[in-house]
Image (cartoon, rainbow, N blue to C red; front, side):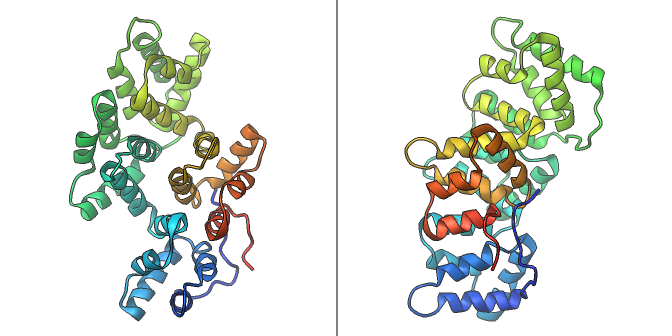
Length: 318
């Protein structure tokens, strides 16, 4: 469930474009106006606004936003503007080709998306960056992590709810044999099962594993694997079992301790606001005894704070 709120009486994309253009004019940018409009428009509305803006002012809205806004707010707004597939492709490309390669960010996005989301992202990736997603994975990742990512973005997984119980138990047995039962780990079995099975099936494998061996599959992965490979397996597993809890944990980690990891904070809020943010908020409060909105409020400030909280559904559009 999404947390994004759209005003009851929707203005036309043309009105929005005019308002935005007005906000950019004059001395300094009327940032509050920009935030108030863009933080309350869904993906479709944002793309119409961009079209209108281009038509009326012969300029790309995102270019203008890039030159008018600063810092974390600029990052957040520019990441919010595109449709989900383009956004994912851009996040992954930046993670693979930035000054600092961020394998974790790329892995989080790839391994928490559905097969159809990945297909869409791959097409956009090729169209936009003139290179295959697989090609960048090949170059930037290594070892078992690379093998898993390549298998994950190429395998066609079933997306429905039906599960074959007997097969799930068989998979649980194979994973036990490949991990906890032996000395060393047979990574190939983990890669095969985690890249080929549907979410519903993996969820079933996880409960079968727990019933059969009294230990959680998650604990087994933590014991048997490490580094980015472990992170990828856990992302796939938790996205199957409870994605809300998984993203709540990542958000908490980004905000705890000294300083906030704003890149992670922005990435998760922006990519999940129109999807399942409601569930993430429920899980966050359950686990950390504090509403996610309060946590974000205390870690951010100014227009940046207003923007993120609007995406979290905190403020009602006046």
